[in-house]
Length: 250
Ligand code: FPP
Image 1 (spheres, rainbow, N blue to C red):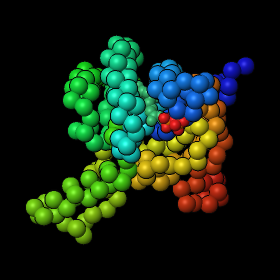
Image 2 (cartoon, rainbow, N blue to C red; image 1 turned 45 degrees about the vertical axis):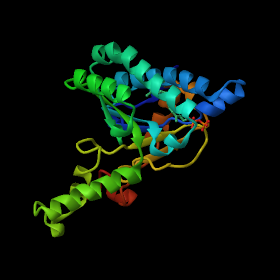
Image 3 (cartoon, helix red, strand yellow; image 1 turned 90 degrees about the vertical axis):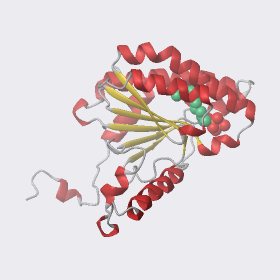
Image 4 (cartoon, rainbow, N blue to C red; image 1 turned 60 degrees about the vertical axis):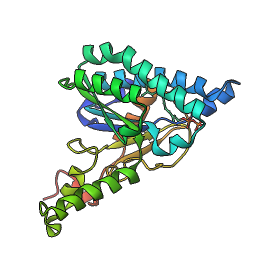
């Protein structure tokens, strides 16, 4: 029996966020250079996107390149950028066939012009797709995003468009790159590292965290199913007591 049958389709998270980690170590284990791991990470991306769409997940956010990743050797940065453009070009027909919208979060202005041009085209081509939203976090970090939101809010206050006394959680939400998207309910990180690494810090306030030792290039739909089964076995209380969550609670 496939583990998939143990997933309750009625209780899926709307939004899954993933920290794809371990490409470098996967390559090293095979005596290859780090970029070999990134190349094989693409197959894991493809399988994860397809399986999320098939299950009915509405939003999938993948941490593809952090602001900190700019500090990596130039050769690796170039290889990652090239891989991104190649994969997006190759997979655009699949995104269209599967009715998947692509968007990005992050400082995309800092990306090489060839990459941002390609991204803009795919974003516009897939803009009316409705089955699932695939969010690529590119040149992204949560602190960068929150700083940007503070600047945008500050400018509105300065122009007299926003009353500081009226700032609430919704105001912050609306000025983040993820404005309009539901918060992730499940965050998965591969490779055995138990860290959040500056990823969606505001948005994961109530997310369930799932860490697996699988290295990203080895991650496949069965691993996603395991994560979902684990997620569904947890009681999400949002600060309430178990009794308050019971259907019998008046
Ligand atoms: C982390 O592994 C992975 C990345 C920084 C890049 C992820 C990119 C891909 C999977 C390829 C293309 C992506 C898309 C969306 C088509 P690491 O290099 O930090 O591994 P390590 O921790 O073992 O060194």
